[in-house]
Image (tube, rainbow, N blue to C red; front, side):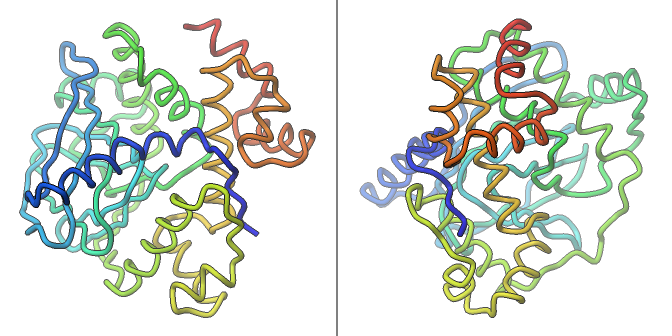
Amino acid sequence: MYDIGEGRFLADLAIALTGALARRNEAGTPGDISARRLGKGDGWVVDDMICTADRRDRAFEERHGGFSIALILAGSFQYSSGRSSELMTPGSIMLGSPGQCFVCAHDHAPGDRCLSFRFAPEFFRRSAHDAGAPVRRGFASLRVPPVRALSPLISRAIADLPTASDGLWEEIATRVSVAIARLTTGAPTRDDRNPLPSSIARVTRAVRDIERHDAARLPLASLARRAGLSPYHFLRTFESITGATPHQYVRRLRLRDAAVRLLTTNDKVLDVALASGFGDVSNFNRAFRAEFGASPRAYRAATLRDV
């Protein structure tokens, strides 16, 4: 069973997207992108972006002006460049290089919300070089899937989303640039990456089911049935496109949700565990330590001390 927990904190991130989509449908207007500027400095910009596009809107080619790194907070979309294509889902990270042409499409489900970091090439390359992870031309891939190494950074960014100042966003932006440079340095190219549209559609439905049904228990058989695949083929397709198995994907969402709760509330660890879908606090403690490298109490104390 993939139990993603009742009252999931990260589900709140989708509320603004849901409202924007409802207003778009009521007004009968084309899809659009709204950006709320969170912070800006010398060589970096951070925006909270909501897109209301769906299959009715024509996808058009765009070009990255510098290095772009977008944390997907809610929704999903197809991100393509050249012969490569990726399905972007919550927890994954979109990568863009200077001068790179790309297309974003919502063929299988409407809307998305992203935390977008954009860097001048000089800023990004300097940060990467100082961290011992030089990036000379650009990223070798289009996406970083949900991975353990980025969980603390992503949770911190989400926790600070409502109240962070320019000074804090500059710190977060610098950490994001360094973390992505380290993860992607030497990564193999994936020019042959081009999943079938039918596979993208099936996985999109599963991801949206997981995102919507906060209190539901979603058996593998149910997810596979809705995707029109056998459980084995569903597992293989889901992991190929998202970079994680359904169990890993849901578990990582729950743990990031717990981390955000620890940083934004005074709730007891037991209450955080239960609210994030963990029925046993000892299991929660073990999973949290494996994901974040510290116990929930130590993580909360250390992170808040750094603020």
